Length: 532
Image 1 (cartoon, rainbow, N blue to C red):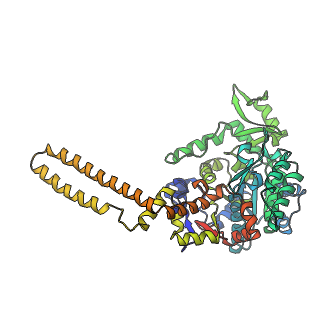
Image 2 (image 1 turned 135 degrees about the horizontal axis):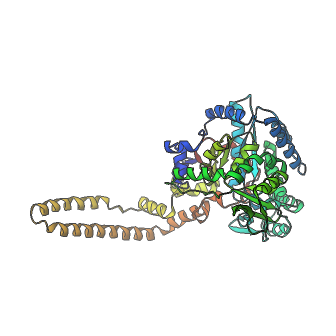
Image 3 (image 1 turned 60 degrees about the vertical axis):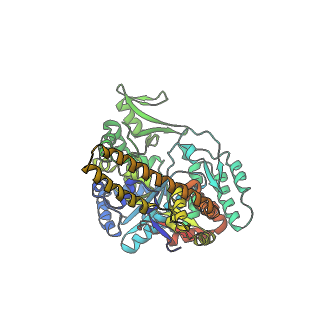
C-alpha cells in the first residue's frame, strides 16, 4: 500500500468546522489566538510570559506544591520529578491535554492525546532551547457522567463496572473493581504482556481507593519515563487561585454573555456547547449540581442549599474546592493555574474551545494555541498484506462501506457499469429534439422533457441492476473487502474511538507505545496508519 497516512480532510471523519480550522479559513481566525505552527510558539511564549506574570511566582509555587502532594502516593520517575521542579521557573511552560477517567484508559485515543503532548514538548525544546516545556495530562476528575467512563472495549466485548455515582467521578471509590479485574483477566491468557496488563489493572484499581488516584497510577506507569506530569484540578489550593474568576462568574455571568456572542459567529456550524447563566457546579463527595440565580438567591439545584450574594462569596472564599467549573469555564481555570501555551484535543473538544476566546479576553487571560490531536489507525502486517491482495488503498478503506463496495465492483468488473457515456449521448439527442419542439409546437416541449426524464431514469435503473448483478458475481472478493474494513473500522467507525490499548498491547507489548512515540508528529495534519 503506497501511503501510511491520509490527510484529516480526506479521511471523512472530521466536521466541517475542524476542516475549515485546519485550512485556516479567514472567517474563523477571530476565534483563536495563533494557529499551531512551530514558528508561532515564539509569540505565544512571550504573551504567556507577560500574561502569567501577575503573581506568577506564587502561582507556580502553589502548582508545584500541589503536584508534589498529589504524587506522594505513586512512584514518579526522575524525569517527571524534574519537570515538576522546572515549573517553579519563569522560563518553563506547559503543553496540556485533558481526558476523562475512563476505565483502563478507555478508547485508544487516550494514548494518542498524551503522546502528541509529550512529542510536541520535545519538538519545542529543540526549537526553543532556552525554555522548558512540560507535558501535562489534566485528569477530568470533576466530571460526573459515570456512564461515559465505566467501561472499555476489549476484542469487541464490553468490560463494564456497575456502580452508582452521584458526585465528581475522581472522588468515586474503586470498591467493586476486583470483580471487573477478574472478568477482564480471564480473557487475557498467558505471557509477559498479559502479566503487565494484569499488574497495571490490579495495582491501579484494587490498591488505590478512588478513581483519580487509580487513573494517575495507570497513566504514570505508561508514561512516567517520558516525564508526563498528571494534574488533578479538584484541589482547594488550585481553586483558591481561581477565586477572582469564579466570583466574576457568580456576580456578572460574564462567560454566558461572551460565549453567546461568539456562538452567533458559528451559526453555519454545529455549536458544540451552550453556556448556562452560571457555569459553575457545587460539589461534595456525593454531589455535583448546578448553581443557579433565582429570586435574588443563589441556589444549588436538587438541594436545600441557598445563599445570598454575600453568603455565596464567603462560601467561595472559605471553601473554593466546592465550586467546580463546567465545560465552559474549565478551560479558563486550566489556563489561570498553568503557564500553558497549547491545548491538544480531539475535534469535539477544539470545537467548544473555539467558542471561548472572547471570554478569555474578558477575563484578561491569554488564550492558548489549539492543536488537533494525532489520529491513528493501527493495522497489522497481515491486514496490510490482505489489503494489497485486494488492491485496496488507505483511501479506499477510509471511505464509506457502500461507496467502497460500489467503486471496487466497478474496478473489478469486466463490464463497463458506468452508463455516463450513454446518458450524455441520450441528453445530446434530446437537445436536438428540444430545438425541434421550440421551432414547431411549444406544447410539444413538455412531452419531450417528460420522455427525456423517463429515458434517463431507465438507464439509471439498468445501471443499478447491472451493478447489483456484478456484486453477486464478485461476492467472494467483496465479502473479503467488507471483512477487512470491519476489522479496521469496527461498526464502521474509527478504531481509536472504541478499541482499548490492551487489545494491541497484549499482542505487541511495548512496541506499540514505542512505535507511537516514533511515528506521531503533532504538528502534521495527517491521520497516521501504524503498521505493527
